[in-house]
Amino acid sequence: MAAAAAACTGWRRGSHSCRNLLTNKNSPYAREMLEREARSLIKKYDAEGSGSLSVTQLAKLLGDRDSTTPQGSLPTTDEIQYVLWMADLNGDSCVDVVELQYALQTWQSYIQDRQRLQLHIQKFNRDGSGGLSCDELRQYLSFKRGGVVSEEEAKNVMNTADLSGDGLIQRAELALATEIWRSVGSRKSGTSQMCSIM
Image (cartoon, rainbow, N blue to C red; front, side, top):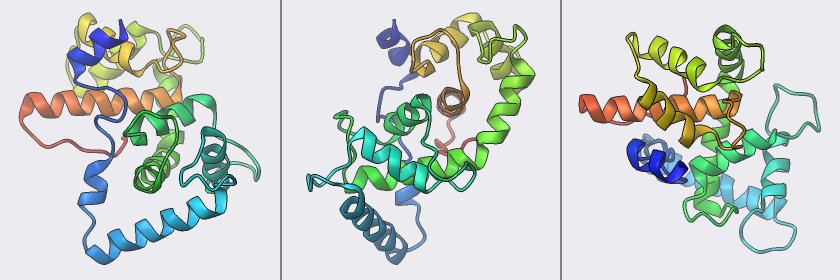
């Protein structure tokens, strides 16, 4: 089911990461600074010296960089899955220096929009489940589009963005669903893909 949805939306893990963010940096100096930061963080958090961060190490790093939650708080499983979905280009569930640059940018964008995403969930979650059902997601996507979204379109986005497989779109999954929807709309309209979460 998820493979069919991925084929319809054009999305699969690591396929539409925030690559444009890195290539659109204003200067080689900015790209170099981001790479230096990633190398430094790998050295700090990579206890085994493998050259990449495991899911546990990545969670610790992201938690340490999140000033919007109490100190020592770790990202939720959905949040980690979302960051990996966007950044883990080779699908090994670890992040290397290049992937960490994507992960950091994805995380920063997400934590800036986390409260807004939660407000969208509260607005469209009519059954009180805490997440969006497929029909509630369709209503949210219709709101984003400013027009009607078909049930099939909503199912395709749902099947791709429901990283936990629980049939509900949680906050981090809503970030992914929004990005998928924006990408699908961009391809239909012929505009370039964007990687910020609105």
